[in-house]
Length: 306
Image 1: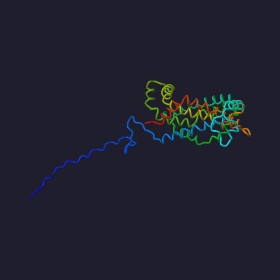
Image 2: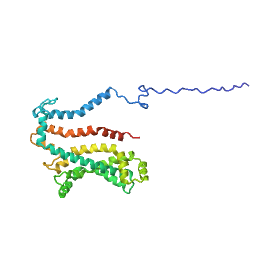
Image 3: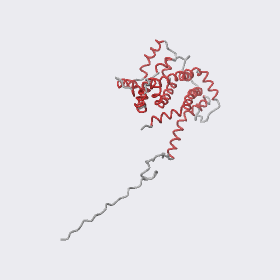
Image 4: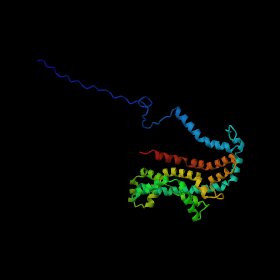
């Protein structure tokens, strides 16, 4: 009988494939540590188109404000600034009493922004980190107010301001908008992740009071979101027209109400109207230039987490 002994064959070792180099097929979406995404030509073309589209309305405002009425209404319209900018600015300033309107708008927008940041940060902290009975129901009620059209509250609010004696005064515009549901919800969502419970517990162990915790722990953590909320609130309050138009009179207007008076005539001068619009836009540009770095930092801090 013949027997065959089994042969011991070693398993074949297959080398693992080398990782694809960045930029080559199979590794185009892999980014190593310290590497950055690089945009192609189409990316720059898209950015240029979007940038020009964003700047063009402001440029057209400048062009229309620096020409006269007849030149603005020509077909085709002018594409270069004219030489009547200073004349139109002076005319808009005198016709609409823009000096007083700007002061009123600064007071209204500043008070609303400061109050919104203060109250919304406190309310957002309470809803995010404090445990109390009915917290979920109260937060639901706050969010539900966002679904109510503001036009429904105009008549009772106007009657209330008249009964108080604030008709035609800046208080009638400031106090109804000192705090908003969007700001409370925005700060709550931010503080849920940006403010760990451990920091609050450590402050309590050190004997800090609630006011000390808010000042030394909550406000520094909430500063990026407060910058974004402050910018949104200031722009909204500065550009608000509907309620100030109803609550104030022509002797005590905000800037947007005063601009409405420029275009209220039967044949308004479009060049003067655009000059007034240019004046109303400059403070917003100044705010963004001064606080632009903090605002962008706040947006990035809220977008990049984990």
